[in-house]
Length: 490
Image (cartoon, rainbow, N blue to C red):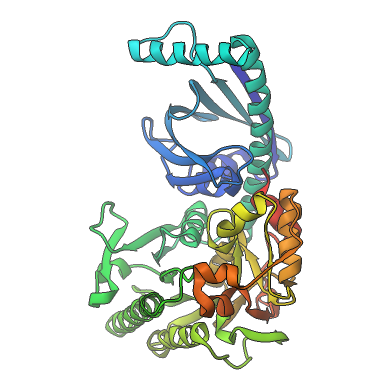
């Protein structure tokens, strides 16, 4: 049995820290993206509830994962414990203990684990598994004690990285929640199951707010409400007593630009946004100013609005729309929100940049190349890349929600755009891999087709973050190198 401990210190009170950690969304927010992803959270205060995760294998930046189920088994005033119900360890138990000291809160994480089965195995199946492992160790010439020592060293090194990252993430979120402290509200989210939607939902529930989700399948929880954008159907009870709606849905653009896929990209955005905007306008009129329905509508858009070939031109929100398929999609997408705006809802269009995350998007697609030292930039590498971290795109949505002065289009990008060449080199540096070779456009064309390469890989958009910064937003990750190291550390 091995024991690992990690001590974290935070400035908020013990009650604040523990309250945040036991709210829905805390596990999603605290989990470093390179260490895996949360599929379903449990409730630390509900003994027997389970959390389901995809736990990344070390040194893979989240590309290779194993299923992990943790069960909450104990909870007290200053402590709670979970243990592995299913996963790669023979046994695993994680206890959080909280201590309040003058001016700070101390959290001690204690993990006790076993890599290999003990001598006493409960069932014949376990015995067979244990014997097989022992035979494997003999073939390796190590023996049980030697293998455990090597394994514990590697595990402890990995856990040190994980818990250091957790401490940083928890501290950043506690600061964020203090900055956006607000009486609890109810927010309806479309697209909550996506990469960005999960983080936005977790930030909101971490702040004590209620999140309702629109789902296309049959609802399975009391906070789920069905809708079918293609059929123009939506359960309007979702909006009763809600203050805002956030729309994040839409088919992925990271696919071959066939006519069928392009149609799905366009229609998935226009149909869903039109349905939401018209419905919100209708319920607002019926409400008659009583304040029992949403007054804010925040909808995704993209810097693709400006077109794919804007060179180094600084693009503020007042810049004219560009040309091309994605520019046309974004123009129609934003226009579809007009009914809500005309009905008096504060409407914000989040023009998203290139989201940098190990959990999804183009970075995840390119990770195998970078990990093998074959990553690089497409074309000349001089294209301007307006990027944003996953934490920041989630934070920007919450900022837009609680910043009443913000409306209309907002560039959701970091204040430090870079060239494609610089982006590739920085990814390589974060992974400690070379990334200096240009990639012929013909290579990504195999995945995206020629039009997709022009619209995505070769696009140059130098979007300005000035409007966002002047509205008071403080970035989690304003610098690319730091953002990528936090996202990809292995």
